Image (tube, helix red, strand yellow):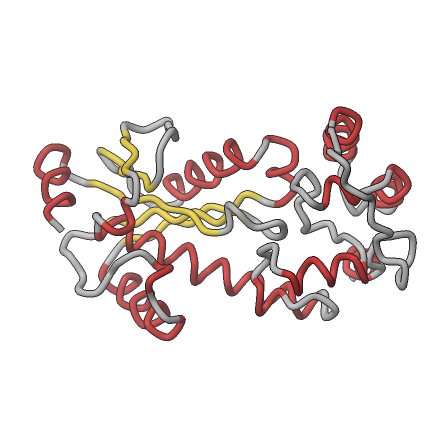
Length: 249
C-alpha cells in the first residue's frame, strides 16, 4: 500500500505491529511485528477475513516476510493493566524480529514504544504491514486458545477464544474462574470473592503479586448494584479444579 511505501522511503526497514486479544476476558494478548519488502495481495485487517483466508495469508506472510511474536499473559494484564501489557507484548514482538527496524507503525492510538514509531487508527485497513501483523497475531492467538480448550475442556475456548460471549460467561458461572482468566476485567472482578482469590493464591494458581493487585481492585471497586455470582457452585470453591491438575503435570 502507498502508506507503507511512504514510510519505507523515509525510514528504510519498517515493521507493522498489531495485537489480538486485547478485549478478551481470558487468555493472553498476542502481538506480532512484520517486515515485508513488497506488498502481498489480499492482506487486510484480520477481522475482515474468513479463518481459511487468514490461514492462507499467514502462510504467505511467513514465506515472504520476517515475523516477530510477543505475548503478554493474563497475569501480566492483571498486574500491569491491559494497555501496558499490550505495549509489553509489542515490545517483545519487535525484539523477536531478528532485526532492528528503523521505524514501526502501530495499529491504534496512544501507544509509544522504545523504537521510533507512530500509531495509525484503523491501520490494519490502511497498511499491508499492519494488516499482516494483525493476521499473524490473530492466527497464533487462536491456536493458543484452541490448546487451552484441551487443557480446560469445560470451557469452549476453541469457539469464543476468550471473549465475553454469553456462552463463556455461563461457563464461568457454572465452573468458576481459571488462572488464564483476566481477574481484573468485568464482570469477573465483580463476581470474585476473597475466598476464591485466596484459594487461587494458596494453590499457586496465581502469584502473590497478582493476588494483591486484584484484592486492591476488589476493595476499591464500586459494584454499582451488581449482584455477586456464586462462581462454580458445581465445582470446588469457585475455582475450576483443573488448575491444580495442570500445575502438577
